[in-house]
Amino acid sequence: MPRVVIADELGPPSAYRLRDLPSRALEPGEVRVEVHAAGISYVDVLTADGRYQVKPPLPFIPGSEAAGVISEVGSAVQGLAVGDRVSASGWGGLFAEEAVLPGRSVRILPDVMGFAEAAVFPVSYATAWHALIDRGQLRAGETLLVLGAGGATGHAAVQLGKHLGARVIASASNEAKRALALAGGADAAVDARADDWRALVKSANGGKGVDVVFDCIGGAATDPAFRSLGWKGRHLVVGFPGGIAALRTNLPLLKGASLIGVDVRQFGEFEPDHAEANRAAAFALAGKGVLRPVIAHRYPLAEFHAAMTEAARGETAGRIVLEMR
Image 1 (cartoon, rainbow, N blue to C red):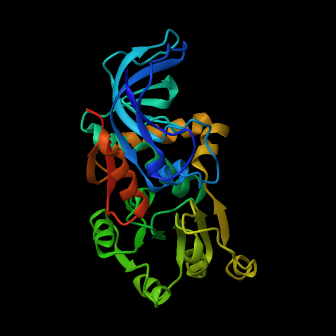
Image 2: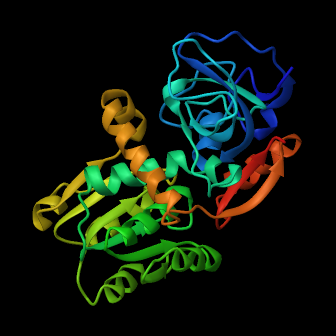
């Protein structure tokens, strides 16, 4: 029987156990995937702990993105076959040696992409794409400020913003994360913990306000970031692990600026065809080597406690991966 990371109640990594779970039969539209690697993000750990804005059903198997090989295909699935190398995304269920998923939620990998890279690609790059292109309408020549630039979605936003022709300013909390952002294409990097942070951002943009803020941090970071916008700027609310911020409503008026919510999960539910087109475009760029995640640490499945704990700290520059095989 395949092993899974599972808990009967949401909680910290210590609440989870490695158990054998019987395989279940496929529905016509489903595929069975032998999981080779699963990505672990801060949001995965937040969800597992019950601190995300949406609570998952119990018992819960964490994991929102993974990669592996199709071992069985349902009778109604088209375009996929046993033996295909695929990436997968879902609302939990992927910290496991095997996953049963809707055929529409998996995608055949480009030949150049390994399992570890593919396991951390779908969610972060789909989020960055939806945020910067659909919601922020980032244009070539504009300036993009990325908060949390050393994290999963932040690094994706740095790479995509640069590909779109923007000047990218990365804000990150430690030197290793700032170096990662610069290596990913950022034009400048500032210390997120600096007392003169707003002055550093303004200086990095030639004394002007920025056009778009990619905010996957929230909390105390949101207000000064919004104040750093220029005229008709767009502030993208992508996440708030730092807490839910309070923003004075006169600020959007004074700047002619917009506060824009980004929820890639609901986007996929309400606009599935658009979301699928975004994923296809992102993977096409991955196949050309334009978009590439960076793997920091790899853990075997049996060491999932350590992997989840590291992800929860949020200090690592690059992605953390569980390897099943």
